[in-house]
Image: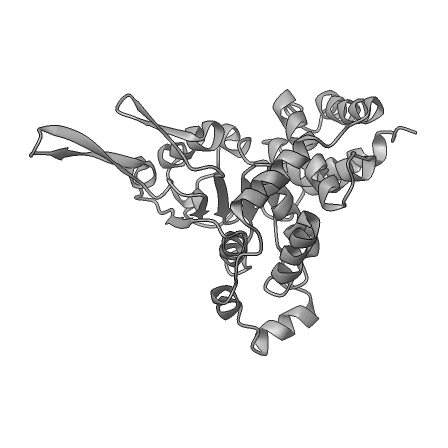
Length: 309
């Protein structure tokens, strides 16, 4: 029953974001694995549309934060306001206190404001004036960022990038799908008409089921071999961390779950490998601009490391 609903979600999203089935599946995998999603692309490619559609179809509370150069940390997490009536400060929660947060154009904000998301994304809580405030459960951050070569962007630091389980890019649509857009496929109207396809309890159940997906010793060896290959290569300044390995494992389990399997196979790891690891293997000597000199070295590892038999 759950898998039927998840497949229905993917089918519905495919009618809004045309011709991008793999990216849609990776986005859903990210949320099912209780991660955070980073969507990087040029403006006007459908990043915000995808975030809106995901929140609406999952039936979750949603807030959008438009990141700009003058946004302050308090604009994101909230701030304490002095109340003269009782001569005390009262914390007013910011827009981050919701189930799905769209951090739109996150790399247009200063590093100080970007860092306001760090604790929330990692710990599921916000600390202000010595007090800790729990965030809702589930809690997902869907961040969009424009390409690094665009004017007015601040590259996310590695510590911030590492908080995102998966990074995807949408890219230009193929000609046939762009024709549908040009001829009146209005995604905004479609999103307005979307109904939730799954309840919050069902979503939490799916997340618990994913944690129970089994992994064989041979698959652990395969994953460790891939991780070791990044550490031994001279293509990056450093290899993948243990947390990155855990991220690949979580995403692989979620991918297997969408395939209606109770165990992980090598193809599951391969399906999520690039989306989970590329943004964690940045190298200052490599071109960071969108679509250039970045994906191939990571993907090539899948051909270089032997699959267990």
